[in-house]
Image (cartoon, rainbow, N blue to C red; front, side, top):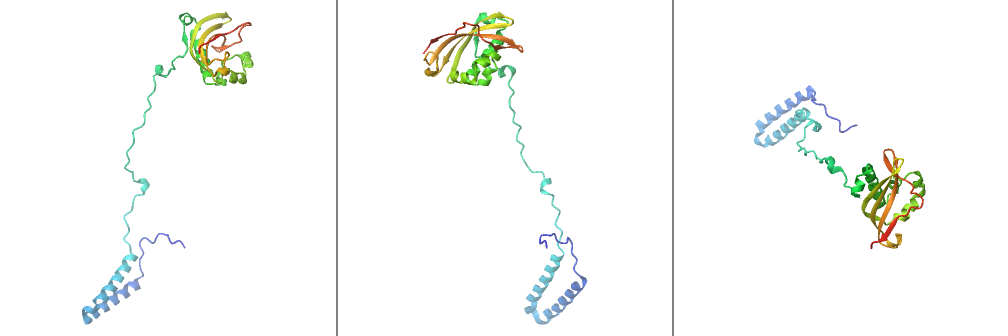
Amino acid sequence: MDYYAEPDPDPQPPSPRRGGSGLMIAAIVVLVLAAGGGAFAVVSSLTGNSTGEHSSSQPTPAAPTQPASSVPAATTTAPASHTPTASPSASKTASTVAMSPSASASHAAARVRTLLEHYFAAINAHNYAAYSSLLDAQMQQNNPQSKFASGYATTRDSAEKITSIADTGAGGVAATVTFTSHQNPADSINNSSCTAWTITLYLQPQDGSYVIGVPPAGYRSVHQDCS
């Protein structure tokens, strides 16, 4: 049996019970008149029990309540957060690679600067995947991840400047760059914590941009201690 089943909404007691109760009350009233106030408490008690039984058997239906889910809660709506949208000029990262006036005059200046920014950013972040993506197929073979890791493990480059851009034919250019590298002395080419470099990157056109190609035979970089 389910003890939590809802009761009959309006139960009606049997008629014989209601009539018998009325005769009993009438007899008690006669006794009250005969016996005086001593029986009044008994009459009151019996009358109260009868009234309580009747009211419990005929409950007054409660006013229907609206489901809680349908009652709108009094809430304060917080204002929607607004993230300012950066202007196109503010969203651009400032260039970290400077250019000489003669290099800036080259038709390839913008593309060369973009590649060099990515090149130095990849080295400073020690990100081989980004670094390798800037090399052509032959340079990727010549510069595996193990070589990149041993060569740039503690390197941090700065003060980069493109000093010249020269055409090399077939759409390629040679970009000469000066910069300073800081590293653990044991990892440097000259046992120094600071090295001033001048290098030339030989760039080949690819997909509207450039990749770094193999330098010509006999090429050598220039470096000196600056610590």
